[in-house]
Every structure is written in C-alpha cells, then in structure tokens.
Length: 139
Picture 1 (cartoon, rainbow, N blue to C red):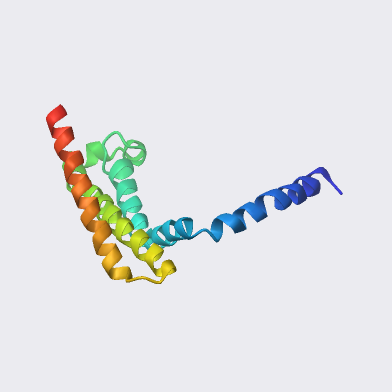
Picture 2 (picture 1 turned 60 degrees about the horizontal axis):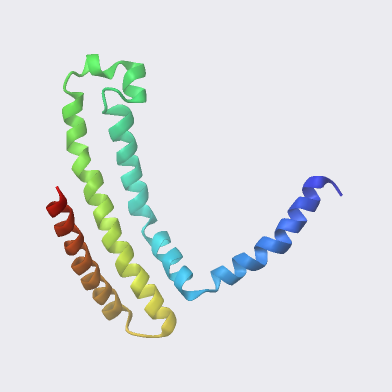
C-alpha cells in the first residue's frame, strides 16, 4: 500500500463516521437543506456580482484587459444599476434562509412547518430592525 492509500484509509476511518453523525443531526440538516434550496438565488447573485465587478467596473479585471472604460465612458453608471440588484438578492436570500431553516427543522420534529417559518421570519425582522436602529445611532 502506498502512502496515499494509507492516508485515505485513515481519513475514511476518522472523517466518515463524523460526517455521518453530523449529517444525521437535525439542526445541521435543516441548515444544509435550506442552503441547498436557496442555491439558485445564490448562484444568480454571484453571477451578477461577477459581472458587476469584473466587466462593469472600470478598474475591473476584464474591463482593464479589454479597455472597456475607454470604449464605454459611462460604464461606471451601468455598474451603479447592478449594485442594488446584488444587495436586494442577498437580502432576499437571508429572508429565504431564515424561513427554510425553521421550516425544515420543524418538519423533522413533525410540527406545523409553515407556522414555524412565519414565526422565524417575525423574529428575524424584530432582531433586524433592532440592529438597523443601533447602527444608525452609531453613525
């Protein structure tokens, strides 16, 4: 047996049982399933972010290579259009994740999943508003 085979065998002996134990834990499974469900939104936000900072930013990598700033002098204004889209998508993903984690966890316990999701959203908005007010006071 080579060194890599021994290493792989030892890692499988250690990591696989830990992964199985973590995978069977309800709370971790609820978080995992929520992020898997929200992945399409995450991917869309990532693509928009990539376009925003590599192509539309005059100092971006692709814009610098192709000299898009000289070809399109108003390219920075186009970047301004996509910034709210990225921020809005991230905010929607946060709301979606909060709802889905509560819903998935309640499903695993056999409760009313929609009610739990709505309750989690209510708690999220209460805490989020409190956080926004604190940051505005500090500024």
